[in-house]
Length: 80
Image (cartoon, rainbow, N blue to C red; front, side):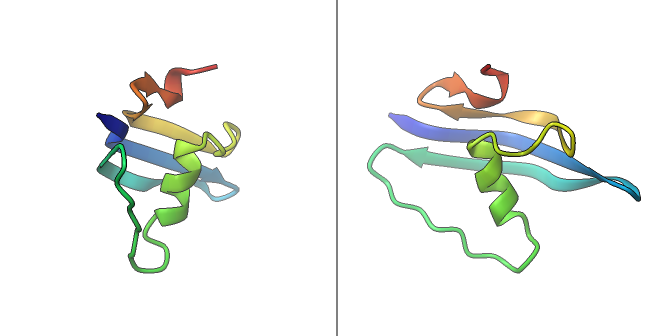
């Protein structure tokens, strides 16, 4: 059974200088019982991907342009 399923996640962030797309089409699937680690370059989006799963991106600064994050079958981005 799929525990976490991220499909085509796209995130933009706002700053004083404007809005910039940060995450571009992230796809990730973690099955129940699997252990994953993310190893990438600095600034590649590891932390923002994790914060997105936890819904810790403030709406005042971040906007999801496309995609879905399903945790145990529920879309995290559509939850209250």
